[in-house]
Length: 464
Image (cartoon, rainbow, N blue to C red; front, side, top):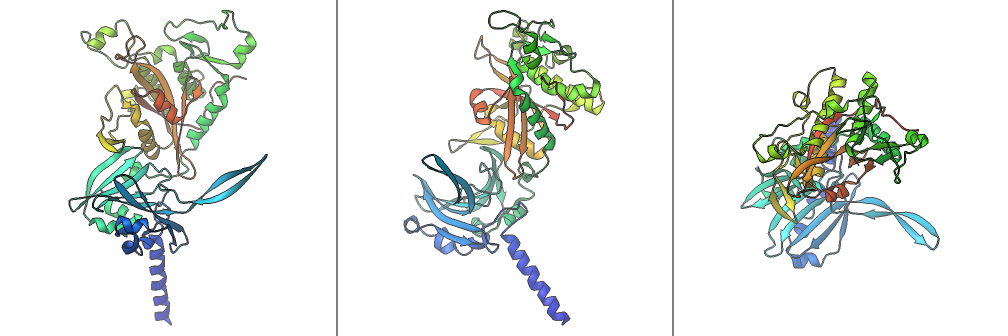
């Protein structure tokens, strides 16, 4: 009897282990068991044979349905093994709308596996594993000269590239995602893309509070509220009147309901919602305009800085971040002593139109190319949960496009939702802007980031 119980336990453990191969620590479906049955039928035949196939459907042992199909372009063809998911589709019939659920098998869904081969000789090129809810984050393995190399790709940028993996490429045909995680746990920076849910409550509270106040903001050049709530010029420190389009003073009723702020004043309003509850008053204009960067007086920037403020928004964001950190930590210091600059070298190169291009990464006192901002914020959300970031934008001046200056500024609130999908609230000049529109608006510019800890004790001054 004891021997039977022991054997039963061994069988149970073995079955549990095999079932685990169909799932993994990322909690996504895995097609390893299915792929072991289609090596000869789908993964190695020539292109002409595969063109005759229709899509095929198979279930793994925990009941997840995968679709197996072939796709091709001018130079490559690929075999896709993608898990089933569902979407809502609105069916319109006259004046009525009916919502139905439809099964789909997206190419980049979490749990998808893709083998790419060349059309020329049919040789295997690379295998991609998709493991997050965002299809532009994945790990791929490349076959080159009887060696296998791994790349970890985040939103078009390489978090790791050409990492040698000591396995034959053919092992990937049947390897589970947990297998590749085990093989590369010490060689790929998985921490940059590992999503831990439910860590973004304070970030979402702050972003929600800001969104609820957006209707109250009216853009006004060179305007912000001082530490006591008086509307003043940032550059002169003098009180400024609020005038309508005809040059007349706006009514007291309008002043009660609206915030009149510049882009810098808007960021100050955001941070004052952290500072003021702690000490009873907000940040002062004087402490936010303190220079954080010195130029050689005989150099080009040094000469220009005698007539123009080249680093206005960089100074503003650094000093705002330092004030927020100081008030919450009860320490005195600046952005340097608190380590508030974001200056990581996260990425080695980028994918541009399907080709690899070297990346400049972080440039001291300049920041990152706007092209990297989504990838950067993704990694920051994964590695620094519940922080938000003030961004100083360096771009061509209105006087000379080739002279780069820090004029505009922005606030980023990156997060992962409860399903593990990346999102980011972006606020500038009293409005919200989508990520793709932000990147397009500032194409060719740079952004320098300062980190600020999110808080649920967030009470910005609200107009009623």
